[in-house]
Length: 254
Image: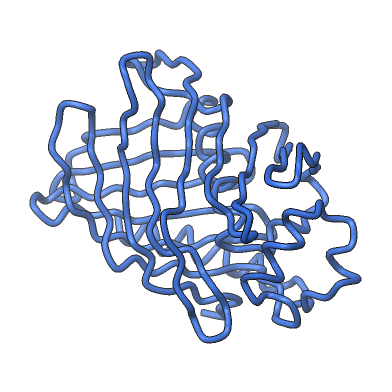
């Protein structure tokens, strides 16, 4: 699985290298909604390089496979590409020999997990998985703010603290609302466009949130730190992922 992850990462990395790096400026962000402009200013992104890709380094991460199961600790390695839109993550459980690779690229999504790197325990590359994988990337638009300037995302300001985004990529359209606090920090993302698996090849759309609980300074930039991912099921909220970001390295070359 790790080799598959690095192959996917290399492909996205090489494609992202062809794009010229810009710098965040007032002119560059002039068409963005006010809450997003404020976020970029408050977090210190102005006059810094606009990301075309990034490594996200997780200090710790945890996954709960179902509401009834216990938390499993993960080692997570992640790479995001802004141009083209892509995301690939490698996750390995600390307590058992199970590893998985999660991918979105060019309208294709795939979750692939193996035991001992040999026995397939999960595999899904359905259209619903592709849409859900694109939304996972959408959640991270404030983590890696180069995404905010893409031509294939349309913004609609709802009020001074929230903005709706409509993202289209490779024929898939999704939407969600980004919420901010009065200080200008991004607090959470909500969507009704993500699919929850209720059985083999069976899915339903369930309200879904990505929540940022804290921030930290990385040099002169304030980055997202403690995050959790939540399904809002009819029987109650199901937090299925939580983690702490150590650092984000943008515009990597290798």
